[in-house]
Amino acid sequence: MYENTIKIKLREADKLVITTLVDNYIDNLLASTEHVERASLMKDGVRRKPLLAEHGLSFFIEVFSGEEHHCIIMDFGISPNAMPKNIAALGVDVDQTEAVFLSHGHHDHIGALREVLGSLPHPIEVYLHPLALSQNRIHVFPDGREIPIPTLQREMIEESGCSIVEISEPHLLASGLVGTLTNIPRKTAFEKGMPTAHYKIDGKIIKDDILDDQGLVVNVKGKGLVVIAGCGHAGIINTINFAREITGVERIYAAVGGFHLTGPEFEPIIDITVESMKQYSPEVIIPCHCTGWKAINLFEKTFPDQFALNSVGAKIVL
Image 1 (tube, one colour):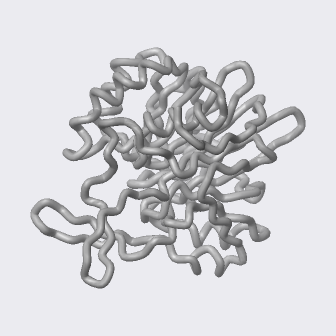
Image 2 (cartoon, rainbow, N blue to C red):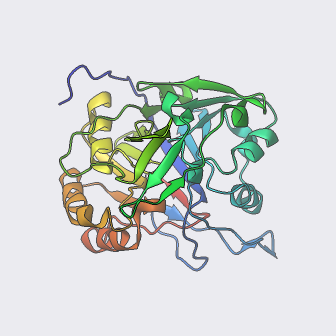
């Protein structure tokens, strides 16, 4: 499928739990389903502190195999406020975290990085693509407006004592139970990235293809692959195809995360993306964050039995 693709030997997991620490949406009255446990309004007989939603994403990922239990934080939302408050309100034990994974360097995925890394009991490794540290990122709009994109700074990680691990190809985490989807080939004809994304260097404007975009993949025993996207700037279909290629596993169990189909630039590819998802017949589809209202509604309409609406505090159990 892809020439010279690096393969990874992904161990099978018995169970995967993804707790949503930050997402764009919250609904305290959603009912739990087979695969999604909703956060209760009460905790130990006392009303839980409010959970906060914002334009951003953060997952606390737990993967199990026999006696093994591994924990990874993926992304940190857009502000320094929501993620720490939600961690406390939900009672998530992030002290168990053994690694951090950044899907890319945009501001809506690094907001509480300093606060959370600084609160951990010991330094850990932060895995990212080298281009996640790119500077001078801007949005350039058709009317000529230029808006800077706040970006990741190396000191935001290193001041906490944590170390940066730059990865430019698929890598194994959690003793081989989690794989990174790094350097995703852009193969589909319709997933062309974010047209407004650019760099501005020495006054020159250069297109930014957001090549630092990456996701995670877990192979759940007897079920297949779970693909976890941050924003899906490489395209969710490209991301899923890459997961199948590097693992050698064809079956897709679940697709979770940001599929980046919101806004006028992306709405034209909603239909073909949803149609393309049919080829995998996933059992679970949970679009989040930047997927957008129109795309989320079409996913629900097209996959009524597989779809679940995400919300801050949701615990996705696979």
